[in-house]
Length: 400
Image 1 (cartoon, rainbow, N blue to C red):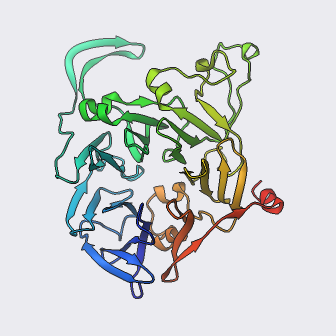
Image 2 (cartoon, rainbow, N blue to C red; image 1 turned 90 degrees about the vertical axis):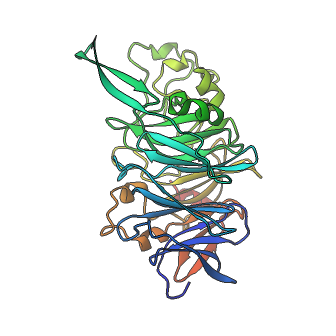
Image 3 (cartoon, helix red, strand yellow; image 1 turned 180 degrees about the vertical axis):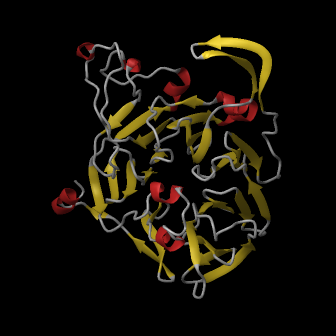
């Protein structure tokens, strides 16, 4: 990619050594360093001069988004067909453009955000929008009284008060998560059943009970079709008011990794072993693990990073400002490389200030390629790749 200013890169989810690159000429390029790159499409609806760019690659489709903007586009590699997308701009400056791919009845579907509180699903094989509906949220003449006073009763249809952000899709495509937030503001993850969503839309969503503050888009990944894991903020965990901690088998405590079973979230029942009265606590999860692989700000909030699941070894791969790690599901670090790290976190780019953080700064962030179990980034005109290795005692100490 000589003589091109690359702004964003994403590896293929299936094809060996294939990459999608977006450049400042608004060109979407495809290929690799050995065989070269060809321009697939000119995406003139994307504004890289003012917005950070994020790419999603689900063969044979590539989606390019303004991460904190209103525009996106999907390109079919096989015929270079372009489908332009957009979302409403209400607080999109701090909410990632929600995008997710899934297979459904042998078709590739695209989940794409169209408003702050609305996701739509399009069949990319046929072009059919599968989620056409009316959304209503308006005052009526009927009055109601609550603890804050008397107000006009609201008429609501297909409406939720929730800001979608980064999406995560289960391996079988039967569920997906929105890693977003609600006023004022508080982050929490909404869980959706794909079949239910196609019939009931956002109103079928279930939320995790983990709600802290400003860390939407927190590190998160599915570890199987029924369970996902998040990285928790480093804060003090206490029992809710009125709960006698002495009656609990295990006192409330901070754990860096929290696991959630979708089946438990959907049923409203949490079954963490050995803890009676668990759903009376402010955190309700299915399992937990202790480690020290993420960086926190002065408020104990995670500043950035990613989690990935490696099914071949049933392990997690994490990347943060501390380095890259492979660890068991119960938190034991097996491999690490403290030279592979994220230099620009979510907090820095959420302001969308290209004068403070540039596209070049973001390209320095390493990304994980779960097909080839390696890390990559675009550096000095070429793609740089690295592996992590068995952890030494010195490296273990360096992560603490």
